[in-house]
Length: 136
Image (cartoon, rainbow, N blue to C red):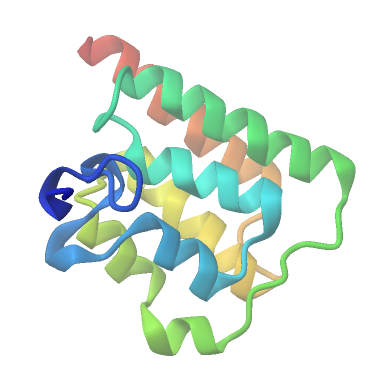
């Protein structure tokens, strides 16, 4: 029998925010697809498992790959906002500064195609990485 509080397969603690919101729920509700979904997953877990700077670098890599490929994403639907506003997701995971700003911007980009340009989000991610590296 598995204790769900420490179930590293079905509900790993580094992917759970305040109030029990899970990263997988965010990814599914926003219908983020591979590139943006993986970027957001790394942003939501950054600092909760391993190196925060490393997770932020991984998020940046996935986001840049999406931006450079000019993929058909974003694919999220506005109904995702009814489930959880991007700002609420950032708050639930305790994200702040450039880290929170970049996460919120990617989620907004997924819903509204006229969000922050990818270059601005990449700059936010660079700043978040610099902050994490300076803190470690």
